[in-house]
Image (cartoon, rainbow, N blue to C red):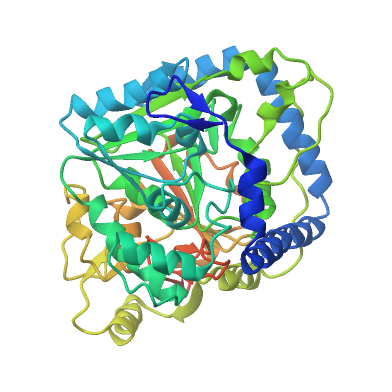
Amino acid sequence: MSKTPSMGKSVRIDHAKAAGAFLQKPDHVAFHDKRLWDLRSKRDAQAHGIPEWEQMRELASGIKEHTLSNLAGYLAQFTDEAEKNGVTVHFAANAEEHNELVYRLMSERGMTSLVKSKSMLTDECYMRDYLEPRGITVMETDLGERIQQLDHQDPSHMVVPAVHKLRADVAELFGKTIGTDPHNSDIHYLAESQRMNTRPYFVREKTAGMTGCNFAVAETGTVVVCTNEGNADLSANVPPLHIASIGIEKIIPAIADLGVFVRMLSRSALRSPITQYTSHFRAPRPGTEMHYILVDNGRSERLAMDDFWFSLKCIRCGACMRKSARCSPRPDVPLFPSPAGDLRERFTAALTPMGGNCVEASSLDEVKAMIAARFGADAIVASAVPGIDGNRALSAQTVPASLEDVDVGVVHARFGVAETGSVWFSEQEYVVNALGYLSQHLVVLLDLSQMVEGLQQVYRHDDFKTARYAMLVTGPSATADIEGVLIHGAQGVRSLTVVWLAA
């Protein structure tokens, strides 16, 4: 079915006709088959590389099943915790209520632009079709979603929205819509053009930010968003209003459960151990607003259907989880054994393929010299690390949008994760959260003594229960939305350098 702007009507799409037209393009068909098979084969390689993979699938299925069979209680707990944290929680029975809430939140504050990261829920609600006739400019900031928006098409895949397009298609489209050279189909050029076209929207006045939600944690009222491009964190950390659209099936009981789900999600979707950015939003930044919209839109009806309720277990990874019996207790999640090996070596081996690099320094003076040598003496540097003075002042009162011209951000990680090559920050380390995403490059100081084994150990830290905002960063921002070619510097930082500090 397809939508009309009225929201109340739909027209039937002739999928056979559309498929027939696509099959008349042999180059597109050949690439489409190759790309999807590549995703599948690399997913299988990731799965086979973890001895406990099948056990984790069963645990994830059991946790979801338990949550769905106790959904009312967990929704109440999530709402109570979020409101304690200063978040305003709304409930939407259907798509129209969701869209009306978004419009009201923006119009009452005089906001006319919305920057948003990928959200299948907002696609499901046809939110853009509702907002744009009412004077709200909606900017899709994910590269694949933006391509589809500019072409007035819905996403063709839940993970890779523009997988049916080739680079020449994107070049022609960008030439018509954002003024680039329609004959230049170099993928680096296309991705950079989209970055330069989109980034100014994050710092515009009268702009709100929106994210979707991969997991909503009842224990803490936390929303978890897993992305690669850095656009979700720009959307949430620069504008003064952050709206999160959340399907009610995204609830999970506890922070520790993320040690299962986060380990599975990116491996299933994109064959990487973790996404570049795993963001945990628990409370609004001082002086700003955060609103959660919990959306039903037919989910509670489906929950009552014997043949369909288990579809609500879906974590939107593009692979499929097993069906299991209904009404089981919450499973105990064991702490799986960690691989042998030096933590630093494991960290470096995990970070390098994600596009990050590691260097050593014996002192803060050596770090400053490295920054000057690598980025130039005239680089604009904003530092959140005492002892490394940048030439751009940084304090809790710094307006996030004022950091848009920063060349290098410097921050000290609280700890690192050997399994994934991730570094952990909160608002305390960043000082201004936008530092980690508006900066062109990020330099991260890390003490070897602050390493942990893996994601399961990370999600047993109490830090997640106290931080307003917590982030696992694994490399620079990245996208492969055009023909599967990996590009660093999608929306967030162009490079990530981890500096090992001598003990």
